Structures are given as C-alpha cells and as structure tokens.
Length: 109
Length: 113
Image: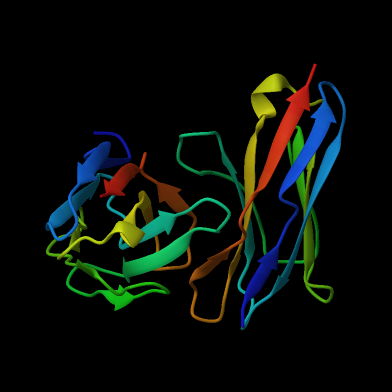
C-alpha cells in the first residue's frame, strides 16, 4: 500500500530552526509537496520538489532524496505565526496526491 | 470572487438527509478535487475531475457523488448522510490537468447526527 509518514507533533523555540521529516512509500513518484495548515483553515502551498536536492524559499527550505524515499522541511528563524500543521504529500503514478497525516508544530516563546 | 469558495461554511445535518456542498473557482483551472480531512488522518480524496464533463473516483468515494457541468463549479452530494461522513470537506483545484499545484477552498465543516 501507499504510505506517508511524518511525526505527529514537534515543539520548537521562537527564533530557532526546526526540521520536519517525511518518508514515503508510494506507487510511483511525480513530485513531493509541502503545505502549511493553520488550525481551522485550508492548507496552503509551501514548496514542491521533484528532483533530488534542496529548494530554498526564504525562511523555508525543502529537501528531497528519491532513492531514500525521504524529504524534510526546514524552517529557520521561527516565528510564533509558524505554529501550524505541516502536511507532506506525494504525487503518485496516477498523478493523485497521497497525503501524510501532518505534523503539528508548536512554537514556544 | 478570488480563488475558490465553498458553501456552506458549516452545517449540522440529520442522518438520512441529502446534502450538496458547493465549490466554485474563478481561476479557470481544469482539474478540481474533493477531499475529506479527519483528525489523525491525512487528506483523503473523494472524487476528482480532470476537466469539465469528466469525473473520477478517489480513495473514499462511497456515499458521495459529484458532477462537473462547467469549468467553475464542482458540487459534492451526499445522497443519504451517515454519521461517519462527519468531517471537514475541502475543495481544491489545479491548473494544468492533474499535474499542477493544488489550491484549496476554505472548507465546509459537516456534522451528521
């Protein structure tokens, strides 16, 4: 079956760096997405990786290793507004997104 | 309208009743999707449409139906609601077929009693 694994919850301190990991086993691979979802709101797009390596976008970076079935989202200079759930999703061979359950990130002052 | 809208925002429904959740986008996206999100689970695809006039079944289609009469609208119907359909429902759309980034509507919180 298809599976996306990410930690359920993480805690970090304001101003620090946090890395959220995602491992996947899917039928085919056509890209990996990270979304941010604040409580009670819709998911919003953060990043997309289809080739191995690091994609940097401001304070957020995303890394992909296709051979290891692994990605991480790196958040730098954490702010209180970064408290949210972070969703990892993989596009499979049918070009449908398979979603992880999300990682709830708690930022403490 | 800017982006994707959904209606209603929330609804409490008696079991056995019929309900249609509405979704409209103004981005001229070809592909649209319906997901449900339940606590502790990832988003699960209910139905999708790659272009107007076509629809397909996702991971959890039972008890739901959709139609895609035009590019902008993609309603989701529960023919006879059951308590297990209590969930938050998100509509999404993407630009070029099913290969582009998906953008989400604000969601509908549905409670079936």
